[in-house]
Image 1 (cartoon, helix red, strand yellow):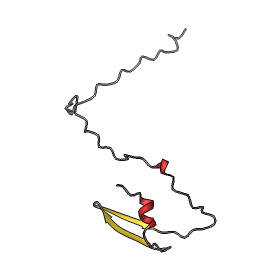
Image 2: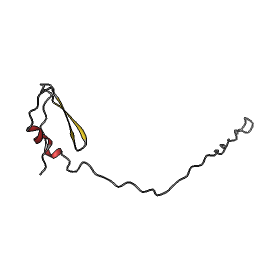
Image 3: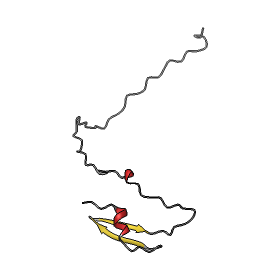
Image 4: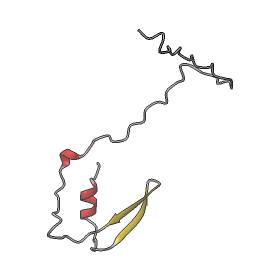
Length: 89
């Protein structure tokens, strides 16, 4: 049975202005508790916004073509022939 984060935090005695840190599954989790302010409305928790499987492990791509770079010189660019005033119609 999975407990949502909001349900788990509802069971904890939190104090406004405090910062809590703990290690969960190898990650450092930090929780800042803010005081409710009239200019900052408190949003409710909507369960429809929760993604069921947010982490997906995709297989690494396999190389299709292997290119080997070699140092060299680029060919000189083609210089266009510019007509003179006499050649102009």
